Length: 303
Length: 269
Image (cartoon, rainbow over all chains, first blue to last red; front, side):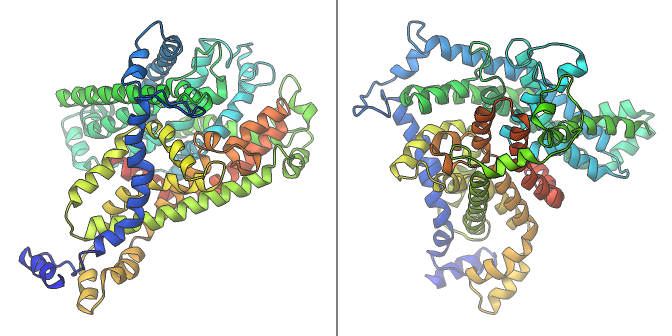
């Protein structure tokens, strides 16, 4: 066995040390066990659950075929109204948060994309909120946005109910999310900018481009692959929004800001209607895959 | 100069809320509810911290702190061990089905995390892990990020040292332990910090798998604390500070690793 693998290696001129046939699997085993039990099995098991009337609290879990899926499209079903209201909330949040989360970090990255004293410090300061968890961030902002005790209304001189009425609740959710995660996209843009060859800027200068010209003709085109990554991950992250609604607005007013994930988990892990909740999660996944594909196409046709 | 004005304004916007929250945690209850709000505590007091450290049966904050520390450390160690072993096999060893296996593992990075939550809950229930720290430590270590991240790093390491060691009779285990791992310290540090942070901050999973106050970590605990102390903002903010200090210290010490790790994996992802 050892001789064979050594010969194979020599034949392909790859000087990999010989190993017994079992060696790779021994290295892989601990991870593969975890991966199978907690990633692969759940992905498949979830489909199975979604085909049943799976109530965690009940003994019988009858097979219902695609009923959990069709119920989401049947306006007579008990979940229809709340489910689509939550999808609407996720849609609104995604549409309003993504442009800010894509454009503002680009501005911050531009500010940081030149050597100056304190650059690492500022980069760290802008990134700091992202290091905190959603629980801490929302606690701090609940107080800041409190209409009676909060600093925000006091500074603005307004009595705005930021977390209990729309459209203010949307502004609060988007604003807090931008504050929390801007640094993440900014450092990714920054890394992308530093990969753009210096010569391109020199060439632009020779061609008479000013700073704006260099930005439009060198920086932006050079950032296309990075921007694709940023746009895609930001859309996915926004569509996954849960904690901010759960903690900041608690879905108020009247469930208007309750997102799809929040509703899905409430159905599945609070009311234990896991079949229906699993069906929701797969439908949402399907939609997100579609969005990602469209997104990739758009970027491809532009290049 | 113009650049610094912009940078300073932004810095106030990003750090101001954190400084203010820190200030509130040192205020008296009367001052915290005073209108208009004060920017910094007029008569600083640590009484809110006294309340937090003392805790109650429903809000054992120090216990939550210890749980967070145990869960995040345990999770981090498990991720490092299983991911580095698997990444070595995927980067350095040849075996049938390797491409397929790597494809499946990386493919799961594209599946949104919420899909796994309900079936994972059922599996963790079957294992008898609900309402225990095990549920917070183990399932998360199955994520594909660590394997993907370390494999990319291992592929970039020179093979000459491996070959020299092999000539001297070393086996793969020796090479992994004495050459690959020591050369990968920066990548391992990045992965360690990122896994610690993500586990320390996780909110969505613990609120559904933990039921008893004594097994909560800080993030779900903070929302209990808020429920218990409603407008006692100094106490609530002291809890928030307690949850932030470790990660902010960790981040300030390892900023380079964290940010470079994130931007590198971002560009390759």
